[in-house]
Amino acid sequence: AGNLWGMTAVIKVARRSGQENAADGSGPVVPPLAMSAFLRAALQHSDSELRLNALEMLCVHAKQTESPTIQEMALVREFLSLNMKSSSSHYRQRTIELLRKFLMRLRISRHNIAMRARKAIRGTRDTKSVPFEAPASEVLALADGADAFLAWISGHLTAALFPGASFERHLTALELQVTVLDVWFPANARYPDSSLLTLKTSPEDDAAAVAVLFRAETASAVIDTMVNSFDNVRRQALEVLMRFPAPLPGIEDRAAVARLLAWAQGMVGSPRARESDSGALVIKVVHLKYVKELGWFISPCPSGRDEAEEAPLEGESPSLYFVRQLLVGIDRIIAAA
Image (spheres, rainbow, N blue to C red):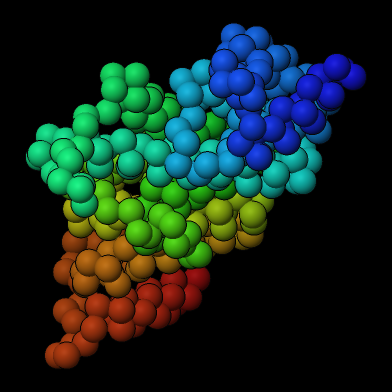
């Protein structure tokens, strides 16, 4: 453990200052294979602080545009597979903070590689009228690796939301999902990073990220997670869904929304706080995504009978109609009680 601590301290400082290579230009001070073996040992150590030190070495670099290597992406995968349910809030917060820096490196470097490739294909020239050269095959492999990592982490975080998972696993997965979405779609973030907002992505890249991150399986898993005993988990699930596009994947027509609202209505009337709060949050999601964003006229309290819902008043906004129908539904439930 002492040797690992010493090595992590030295290499971490070298990476921060951009002095990983030998002074004579002969290459890295520590060979890549030896570095991978050392980092793997540190990431799997029983000492949590040592694991965080090793993770910092993977995530932080002096140049934010420097792409993570394929080996670094693989090591981050291993780390996440083993560290999803720490009981220490400091450990979780520090992990998410470091992974955000890693994801930003991944996103920015992936964007730069794609931009260079597009310029080379179009024959674009620089200020000196020199054509842009296409990225080398090993550089393009890094971009493919970034795409594969994004697909993996999306699936991994969705799989972590299985029924009966611990509070720590649920909260970590949801907080990481928010982090991933904020990095790839900063316009939807509460506090967007300015360096990400300036990235000009192609429609093809955006469509690929949407297909990977906004899946019906993910939306369903997050909605199910709202029925959780812990307030923090329920609120964090709401934060994830706030960043999803409207309509939510897998809930794209009025019939699906009606089924979701009927489920929420059953929970709202429950004497259990977690169920009533969960039902209220689902109704809030429907209002935000389908009423405010899409402008649908929806009743949040379906009567359950075949009779048609009351038509909106002349000039009535979708939100006002939603709230009015909510009050009508509450009155109907009180009368029935």
